[in-house]
Amino acid sequence: MQRPLTWRPFLNQVSLSRIGRELGVPGQELNMEYNPSDHPRASTIFLSKSQTDVLLPNKKVREKRKSLYVNHQHPSGPMRRKYSSCSTIFLDDSTVSQPNLKYTIKCVSLAIYYHIKNRNVDGRMLLDIFDEKLHPLSKSELPSDYDKHDPEQKQIYRFVRTLFSAAQLTAECAIVTLVYLERLLTYAEIDICPANWKRIVLGAILLASKVWDDQAVWNVDYCQILKDITVEDMNELERQFLELLQFNINVPSSVYAKYYFDLRSLSEANNLSFPLEPLSRDKAQKLEAISRLCDDKYKDLRKAAKKRSVSADNLAVVRWSPAIIS
Image (tube, rainbow, N blue to C red; front, side, top):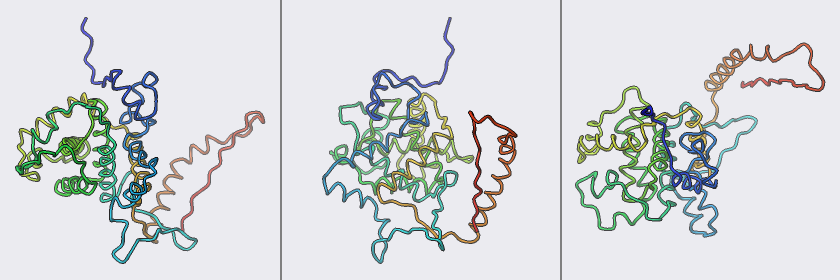
């Protein structure tokens, strides 16, 4: 009897061992639930790779981490860190449901940079569909050592920013792009490197935009952005990317939230803080309105939690503290 066809991704023991090395978990103790792009409790790979430099005592490495982007420098001098006080509260405009587009792209670019920089150099295969030598994105001839030099983080940022700006993609799409990228590296057992990073990122953006946005950008539209690429090449890139993901394009909300907060942790560790602005009266009133909505929503739960009498042996009191913003 033929077994029913399912799209659940299958990871062999080699792949499980690789993820285990990334997460510090023995391969035999790792199962499908600990795939970072599928399970919310598994640590993201990019955050683990970014922490590699923290262990290095080299002063030049530490200084380079501090200057990954020039955005933390103000034209009039270094930007001072802002702290809230009794009279002023500083908040950034990025939330898990509405991330800041510019800084989310910067954080995703930084995550890709650490993937390339701290990749496993052990002779892993390079799939032809992602090789920029075989499938160039421009007519400009690549240098003979194109696969030897790691791209700078600014170069990655400019490439991603150009695509997002031209296609008018959202910040949420950038986070889903990173999820698909790490899922590809895990399922296909490949590493992102100087020879393939552009086409891997392009494929992840192409797929994420179609899954996330209601009005997705067509493949032919990307050919208008990248003038020298053909529609047939874009179609083949999308097809093989989906096959390597084993058609698992589902991104649970818990996984999305994990990647968002890990990106924020990455930004803090690299002095790439989201811009802080004083809390205005209008924004405070909106937050207070949201607080009232949540209070009404959980009012019934609070009533259900209250009991007329409880045993002293099993005493549990639910305490609620209302948030007041004035």
